[in-house]
Image (cartoon, rainbow, N blue to C red; front, side):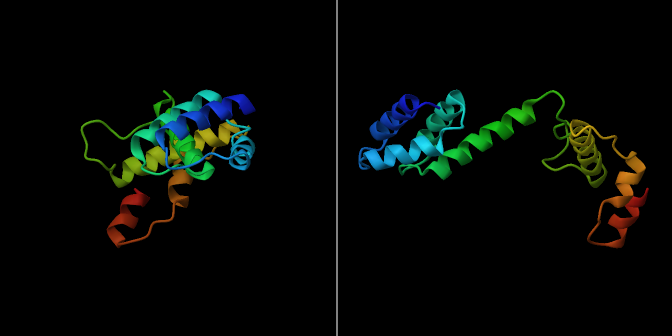
Length: 139
């Protein structure tokens, strides 16, 4: 972001949170904190922050909103497998391993390597808990 864009963001935040005075030192800090961020993502994060929070944000809290938005975008990616339809909020153990394997394969291929087979991956997943869960993981 440019200093002018950061100033525009601070103007919005100043209007939303009138009890906080934006000083020149504060503006300089924000310019440094948001220098490497995308303008659209920052503006969307500010919009979300103003809707949800009572107090003037810190750069770190606003960056958390930016990271959350990026994570939501990643989850919406067609290559990302969401939870199975028609099930409860949580996947079964076997579905969880399959989702983890698909995520592992994407990451390993992104790094230019060939992933292990599902069988090799499945047996390398540490299983805590009872014997029934460990037996299910071996199948």
